[in-house]
Length: 266
Image (cartoon, one colour):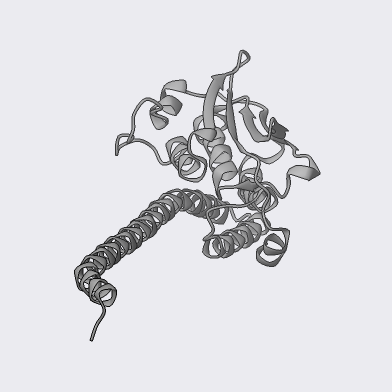
């Protein structure tokens, strides 16, 4: 015989068991939904990262041909003038450029590598301008391992020649200054050329997002890549100089690159 207390417990068990089971199933359902939500969110984040990386790679690919075309034009001119020594040097620089291009797939590299790459471009310009070109570079040693998107400095220097120094009569002066301020890196590229500010501003539609498709691949490209890497913590500005020429100022957060990786890939 089952006692009254046992019978009561048995009845409670049969009543509560379905309720407990239903609650357990509900919690399991909520938990599975939560897992699905987290998985979908992770997939979305990964897709956004891949999209950002694809866009960044596209922007990088846009600016690299400019140097190549300019270099080929210089090589052609040197060949026509039978300037064999300069021609050989130009071909060496072109080879170094192509080597750097196919090794540089990272979104950020050290300033040391960026400066080394830019010097290859300046070698070409020295062949073109000869003794009338003066270049002054100032970069403290403690900034050489700061991170920068590749081709930023080279593009600014190329713009200085394209929009200013190539039109300059007499001595052509280019200044490259790097400094740090409030955990930010400051890069200034200053030339004494005959810059056309309308052309430069046309390349940099600061008030347009996204920028027009017909905008240039120079300053606007830099602005977009800086935004992809640092968001609103980076900025680019243009200032005409009183004695002619232009100052371009770029600021971005001071982030240190891996010294071992820079040494291996540099």
